[in-house]
Image (cartoon, rainbow over all chains, first blue to last red; front, top):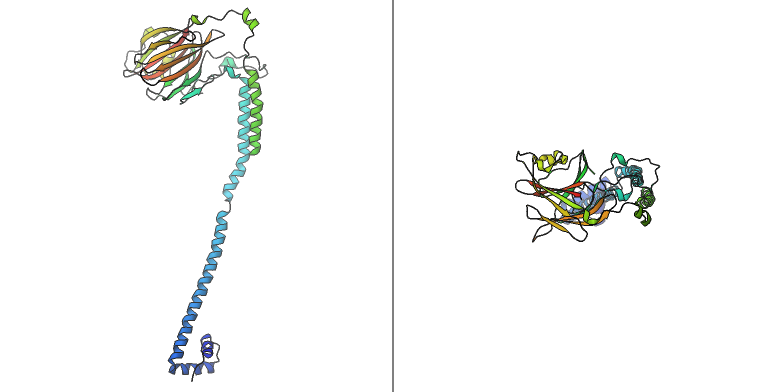
Length: 196
Length: 168
C-alpha cells in the first residue's frame, strides 16, 4: 500500500479514524520512504512547536520588558513626596532668612558694621564684629540716625595673599580686640566664645 | 518654590532701601566748622609691640604692660611672652613707614584716612624682602588707643605677636 503525503500528514496530525490509522501503520512497516517522511513531519512538528513556544515566551518577555521599563520610568512616589512636602518648608526658610536680613539691616547701618572673624580666606571685605550691649536701641528709633557707636576697632579688609588666616575677636575687660591670625603658626582654633 | 524665590527677592529689595538710608551721612561742612577740628594726620602714630610667644616658663614680660588678651584663647596657648621691640610709626597719608620684624619680614603701615571721633583708617602689610608679600593688605579702622593684633608668624620655637595700637 502506498501512503499518500496527505494521509501521512493526517495520520501525523491524528485526524484519521482508528481503522485508517491502523492501515497506515501497517503500510509504514514496509515503506521506508514513508517512515522518513513521517519522521520529517515529526521533526518539523517539533521545530514548529519549539518555535511557537519560543515565540510565545518572547512575547511574554517582551510584554514583561515593556511593563518593567514603564515601571522604571515612572517617578518614584517616594522621591516626589518629599519634594512636594519640602516646598513649603523651603519657602518658609527663605522667607524667614529674608525677614531676618531685613531686621538686622534695619537695626544696624552698614557703615557701622565690622567683622571680627573670618575662618579662612585670601581676600575679604569685612564688616563689624558683633553688637555690643550699647548697640541695643529701640526698634522705632529713626533709621537715619546712627544711634549706635561705631566699634573701636574694625578690620575693614584683609588680603592673605597666598597664605591663609583667620580673623576673630578676643574680648577682655578692655574691650574687643580684633585678631588677625596668620596660618604660619600652629593650628589654633579661634575661641568659640566669639564667633562671627 | 517660585513663590519662595519671589518672596525672598521682594523682601531683599525692600531691605536694600533702609540700608542706604541707614548709612551715616557725612557731616555737613557748616557743622564741621563748629565742631573741634579733626586732629591732623601727623598727630597719629601706630605703636607696635612685637612680642615673642613661646612655651618657655618665663611668663609675661612686665614691659608689655596690661594686655589681658594674652590670658585668653588662643594666646593663652603660649605661657611666655617677651617684648622684643616697641616702636612708634608715624601715620601719615602717602608716607608709609616700615619696621623690620625679627624674622626679617617688614611691617609697613600707612594712614589711609583720618576719621571723626579720633579714628583713623590705616593699612598695614607684611612683606618678605626679595619674596612674595606675606600679608599683602590689612585695612583697619581704629580709634585712638584701641589695639588690634596680628599674630601667627613663626619665630624661634614660637610665634610673633604684633600688637598695634593707634596713639598720638
